Length: 98
Image (tube, rainbow, N blue to C red; front, side):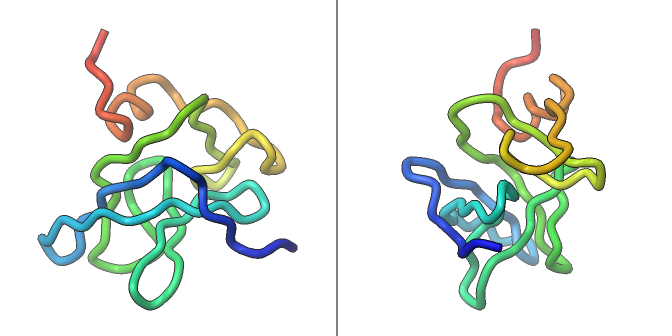
């Protein structure tokens, strides 16, 4: 197990109780997290998070967006990582629909 490492140049916008907030992205053992005031929140491929009343609105990411078998966002370094389906990736990255 490693420690949380900030992903340089990447950020996310999360919604907490209706308030939009820009946060830094972190990686730990291939899994992606958002930094919040109290710690780190796991990001899910469907835009949900591990924190109640918080969702992922948008994120910047350079490269392929991946998910694990449990639907958590991750990098290709995570065990069992699979490419995130294009429609879901477009929603999270704000990319225009093709």
